[in-house]
Length: 223
Image 1 (cartoon, rainbow, N blue to C red):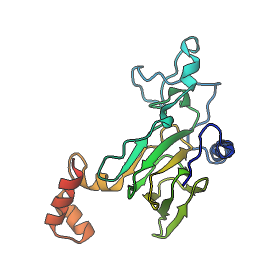
Image 2: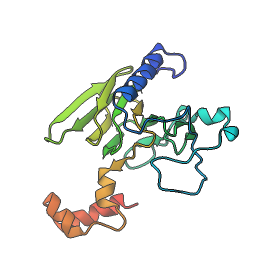
Image 3: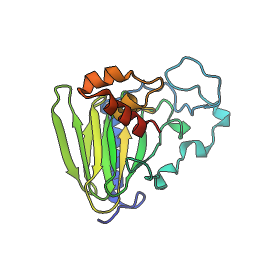
Image 4: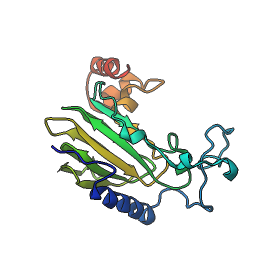
């Protein structure tokens, strides 16, 4: 499957316009009251919905530039996916702008385990390979679609979703959010690798299995 260039493809322009539309119609973060507020990640933490601003006199052009998504993510883990984050934590120029973008690399057979983003809607744009993407509603209805290069799917905020490499080679997609810091909860890790650990009896009852199975799951995911 041919890949798309981030810089040269006309589909990237369409993607950019869709990001702006998603943000303008369904803004999750508060609207800014100034031209920009480049995050001062080293400032003393205070209780604000975002990060303190750098003084404008210290803002540089590079504060609005980020090349992290050009780098392939590490897929050598038990799930076979690599996440390269482009949130405000890596890209301070996003502070108060209500947008961010991640890159996800999937090895052959790789999968992004069931997860959710509590603070943002998500749009998926496939750059390379074939990806099965799906999400489940609060009524336990599954919506799923096999996506090819250039195709898009959108997922409402807070719903459980997953991705699976449905092709023979590697796959790459962008995940676009209408939040500078969408957050993520990976369901298997939250249940079986939390700190402190959820009691085995609770998980055994929830999944209707013996406790030794819960212990085995914790041993696999705890590392």
